[in-house]
Image (tube, rainbow, N blue to C red):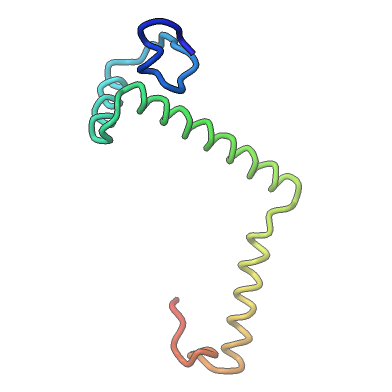
Length: 102
């Protein structure tokens, strides 16, 4: 925690750093912070946190795919197979008696 006059206003923040941004980026961030009703610092903190989480989740998803644990394609294939069986047994309306959305 930063010690001094900022300790009461920073709350749970643990570091105070100096960053450089292009004018365009800073203007966009200020507008976004204003729309969200938060300070520029709070908005930048949230944006950085969201970016880090997206990168972490993307890396995890890539590792799952590399490990062959991604079953999404198999699930879609199973769903298509169920639809084909339903159509063969119950016609175009399927087992629920109404037409499927294409």
